Length: 393
Image 1 (spheres, rainbow, N blue to C red):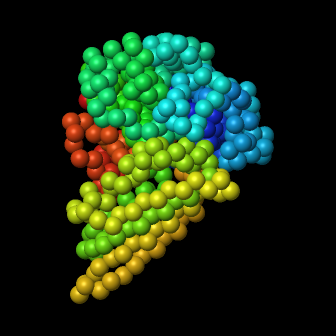
Image 2 (image 1 turned 180 degrees about the vertical axis):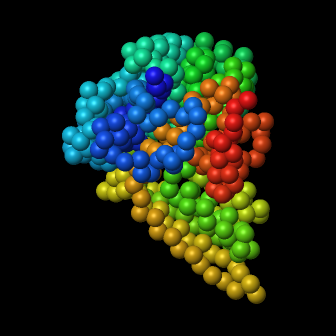
Image 3 (image 1 turned 135 degrees about the horizontal axis):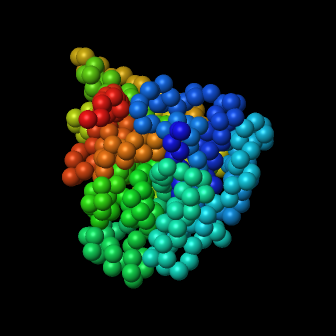
């Protein structure tokens, strides 16, 4: 009998989550192909089949996932009637939330009672999900809105012991993303952070994951503009074309864009997008400018525009201009699905702690021991391929 994997999503009512669930439900119904799923053609022992995935999760919005999906506008009545109707019967579990960490996102479907109570409820939700759906294993994936960056000197974030004390005292330094990460790790459940928010990468939780041998990965899914940047930059490097400047602009109007309309959340996002070029090229690009604008009429149809100034042979100047008109959630949803399947595979293989081989899927890949992350797509793809092809001893 095929093994069944549950994917518990933080932000399950969001555009990326509802798109992921709709796509898998349509695969089960035979009304969707495997197009866009990066690992669909890989035959790897232990990777759970797409048809054997089940979904649940938390959200601050108290509405059916079908209604949530219609509000986001990525999928519509056609998809809901053509295999994705399961969303109409799904409702989010109560979620941890904080306007102190995410100013523009709030809702009535919120947990109360402090940090320890939230952790206990999250773990109870995971246990109930596993039992009700008769799952073999569960993975948690954070697809919630971007939180602000915590202050690096916050006492609760300095050590495992301090973090535990912070949970006991409801310390405001501990964010909702951290609560979910802690609850998952403590329940021996793999955790992926698809957002720019600080979660399992904060020192106490990274140490906790290594101690309990629980697979974790993050952060910030590499979907559109940064994906293209990390494909093109290695080619420019290998052709010895010097990058004098790289100007990037994004406009988007979905809930992710609304969250990023808060300057503190925006700073968190730009921090994950801005570090890639120097590592790939091997020198600092002084004029690497990144701008993100919330533009409501665009909805989930994001536009990413790049201007690249280059110097070539004999000092001749050149320019490269890119205009990527993409659908944010259509790019992101397949990656979230594949990350969950790979984290589950890592757990089956007994590989806990930070899963660096999944760096291909993230803008700022989490590493162990403070190592510099690799950003170039060709190198990242080779690392993932070697891991997927590994024969278990």
